[in-house]
Image 1 (cartoon, helix red, strand yellow):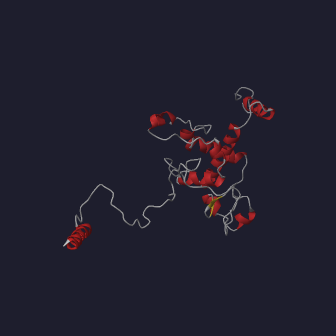
Image 2 (tube, rainbow, N blue to C red):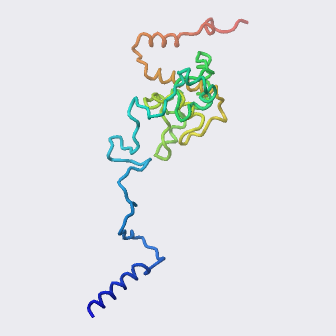
Image 3 (cartoon, one colour):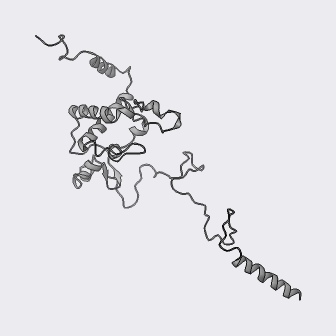
Length: 233
């Protein structure tokens, strides 16, 4: 009799466990007898991590290493640029990699820099500031934590970006910044990149350096066109 009751209770518990309360919802976590690898000690992408010093779960490749079977191209290498004459010029990329340097279709000279300064003042300065420090005329409206601050284009983070990545960001946008491929031509985008490099260089310049002092004095002195006091009547 005792064994009969034990078997009966076991069958009742098994039946209720298999079929009882089926279809009902509960906020409690289910009892998992076999977890079937539902919970694993792993690092998920795009998540924070307290294990690493920088707080990021994703790790960068070891410096100066290249994965087997891959080759990192560069815009400064003729071997890389010759077989893709237009892709880097229009995208800033060689396949999955951002290129560094200016494509052969772009001639970096004073004319290009003047054009870049003009385009930067029209499309970029309103947010990033005329000096690129992120303090444009819209900066006061980002206060209060309502909107993220505008990127400082002359800090070390942006300075370390390859030229192709900056061009790609102007083309496709990033964060709250929309794409400018419909507003700014390809040539003008490269001109903005070139002028941004000038702003970054000037931001890091030492004002006590004799060469820098000379340039500042030349910038303050009147140009030959303005000397003489106006037009003749």
